[in-house]
Structure formats: C-alpha cells, structure tokens
Length: 463
Image (cartoon, rainbow, N blue to C red):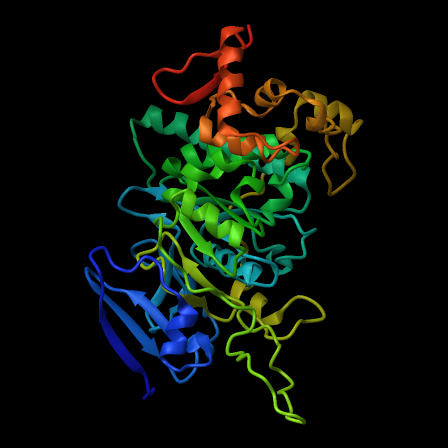
C-alpha cells in the first residue's frame, strides 16, 4: 500500500479559489512539487495528499474495452490521481445528443494520442467518423482506412465540414417529417462525428478558409448535436481568439467536453474569462518534466541521464467534467518509442474490421466557382485546390470604423468581444472608450444598427 500522507483542511466559505502550490510544498518540506496534490472538497473542506511519487506516472496501456461506449454514452480515457476513472462522453442517451468537444494542449502534450483513443472508441462503438488530420496526415496516420472519411488539406476539410452540415440539415428535415424532436441512435441514422485535428491550422489568423471554417464548426456545434452529428476539435492554440475568434467557440464549449493538456498561460486566462473554468479557480501546473527537483548540485555530483526527459504527456484536466480542477492522465496509447511505420499497437486497437459509415463525397460539396477553378476536375484521389484566398486586409492603414466593419459577423458582437477582435486583427491597439465613441458615430451615419437594449453591435444588413 502506498505511503500517502493526507491532510484535511478547513477552508473559508466558498472554498479555496487561489493558492500558492510552491509555498504549500515548501511548508510540507516536499522538494518534488508533483508529489503534492491539492483538491477542494465539498463545502468548507479541502484535502492535501502527499504521495511518495507522482501517482500518475505509472498508468497502464489503454484497452479496447476501455473505449467502448458504456450505457451512459461514455468512454474511459484514463485515470485521476486517486485512481478514479477519467470518463469522456460521446453520447447522451437521456437527451439523444451528440457532443461538442475540444482538446487543447501545447506541442508534445499528448494531444494526438488522445485523439487516437477517441478514434478507436468511435470505431469500436459503431460511431461514424469523418476526420481531418491537418498535419498532412501525420498526427494520427493509423486512422487511415479506420474512419469513413479522411482528409489532410484545409480545402478538403471545408468540403468535409460542408458535408457534415448538409447531413445535419437532411436529418432535421427527415425527423421533422417523422414528428421526431430528437435523435434516436441507429434508428435509422448512426451517431456521427466530425473530428478536426490540428484545428489551429484551419482557424488561425491568415488561414485561407478561416471564416467559413469557423461558421461551419459553430453551426455543427449549435444544430448538429440534436440530430446525432457531433464535432470535436483538437488544437495547439495558446488562446481561443486564435481559433476563429472568441465568439466562435465560447458557447459551443461551455456545454461540451473540454480537455486541457499542458497549456500556455494565455490559454488559461481565456478559459477562465470565457467561463470554461470558474473564475478564481486554480489549476496545479503540468510541468514538461514530472519529478524534476531544482537544487544546487555539489562539485562533481552527477546528474541522472534522464532528469530532463519530458514525461508528462497525457496529463490533463477535464474542465467540463465533475472534477475540473483534479489532475488526470490518459492511459498509454500506442508504443512508447516512435515506430518506423504505422504503430502496430495502435493498429491492433483499431482492429482489422471495416469502419462504420460511408465516405463523404467531397466534390458534391464544391461550389460552381470552385468546380470551375478546379479546371475540369481534380487528379485521381485528390480534390481541387479551391479558389485563391483573398489577401488579408492591411489593418495598419484602416480606420477604426473600417476595422469594425471588417470583424463584425452578421449576427453581431458584444462590445467586449468587439474590442478583443480589434486588438487581435494586427492593427493598432484600441481602448473600449474609443471603440464606443466610434460605434456611436457609425450608428449616427447609418453604418450600424441600434442595439435592442443589449450591448450587441450589429451591422446594417446589405440590401
């Protein structure tokens, strides 16, 4: 049995929202900060546990049994530090809803292995997957032939997303004819997911299809879930504004499944401000190297060869789970060392049976202009490159009014989001007061609609 020291603390009303983890470890005389786990309990109680070593360092390999949907529509991706299962919902049988999900993490945090686990789970559970792997297919190469659709370019991803939205709309019409208000799994349609790995490449500023991609993903998050068409993105973004603008994902993620692997400080601030993590809550940082102790070495004292090896891949927080501030870790997915070809362990998890579902006909979702641009049809096995993207406007030479009209979507923005969008468009920084003054002037000139009692800034619709 592990020699675990446990301290039960009485806390102020509302619990502890902020604490200094390093100071706590110093107080307990523990040099390895990863051995100390703080968790806020119910009411006015918190628990501090000191482990002999980090309890998440020895997780087992994942199994197919872990990844088959349980009766509540969940899969088991890993474990919390206390051994409780880390579950991720792909289907809600009570409401019939597919889910909206996001996986965030910096490079090397274990994002692609987590996506592999979700893909295996979908295949094992009869869920149809249409996958975009925007790292030229390198992020999850074993998914080839194990999903219904697999694309590797941004333009193909747009066509895939158009196909998913079209399928959601078809289901809405069909269910309305049946008098059905919700989705019933496999009667007659299967549960379906669009999964976009390396979504930051599609949604970052300057990406050629950023605006349409953001709209399609938002539409799937808003309407697809009620007809069994879900959407999951995985991204390396350090800030939500990098993913199509803060308005795109905020509402979608608040009720979805959000996993945060090793993160950047900017991403953490955005998650808190957008309400994905309760304001004032504190997460224990996930270091690149777990168990590393910083101390002065004596003269000629040897350092361990592996003391700087990154070993925190897969450590995470499930922000929309029942324990958002408790650290967890995915089970080991695939081989520990890189393979020369496809990872045989991951292929074994997928199995050799055919994936469920039919491939999306990408060319069927090209516009007439795109077909013309493709020049009589693409080469075999590919889709036309699509239209040339319009050049990015030079915001440095634009007035504040011009910049406002450039960033405003048709359904408007709240003033706080408008200020954030202007300060992210590569032009000069603006203050809330100056933006409000410009907005008032634009309304007087008939360039903006007057708000309906809210702070929503809305453009005048074109005739």
